[in-house]
Image (cartoon, rainbow over all chains, first blue to last red; front, side):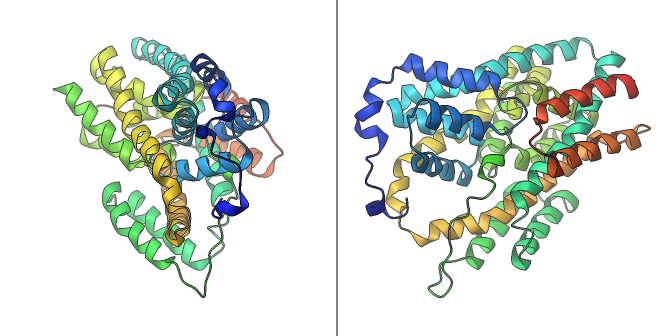
Length: 211
Length: 176
């Protein structure tokens, strides 16, 4: 989508299919995703619903929205929800898409949290959460390496990964300072250069966790 | 006062969450456990585990942190603080994004930030590991983590939710 001439399809906000999509349908669609996306990979759920089933977006538009989501702060799941909701029906669409995506999980998390707080000494609950916590470490490492294996092949990338990791995990530098120093440094190292054109990297795009 | 404090901490985390929830976990733990003393290490792990057990984004765990600090109002403030700033940034950026469609800096930002996000996600993994693989059961916990990692990284399309649930069941049997 870097070259508009190669992508003549009009943006969805310019009318067409989006005129017919009701706010209720937006809410219910995202509610279904929010209530069923267990175990990570919410992007895969979003694509199956928004591109394949509902056809509210084509693949290019989906990937363009995902590119924005990943470049910005916030979770892919919620960034994608508000961006797609906004493109379909403006701010009300964004609010309802966000509400649908988060409300089922929020209600369950709150219920579990209240239960947890009122049973703090319960050995069974502690044992279950300990097991889930340990399993999560394996899940997090697998997802990180699946997304990052390309970054671990080039020396410059490995250096930046290691620098970030050491600063955050071992030197305990606040994240703000890490982002404000290593971020510009990395972008400068990859600055646009006529002799070294960059191509977009979309590997691992479906593997982002539902974090 | 506590509510304002919650709002400040979680809206800061919201705009720092470049690379998503896992990437901001070390900072969340550092602020909520070490700086504010709202939680212990093991409570942070438990609340992260609760986030894993619910559908939708795991980062809805911030609701439980808010609830522990200031009840239902705290839960709402942590939720709004963590999600609203990032959502506003996403909507505004998406509306002006097309103006930068041809800028070569867009790719430079993508390529430059990618390894930083991977580094932050590794740091997030370590932050959870430091709370989850400790104490007298640390070897059993390490074995859990290793089995899940091998199954997901080398195995064929297994739903991670099943492995998370299996971790809970095995925990009930082995970690009591």
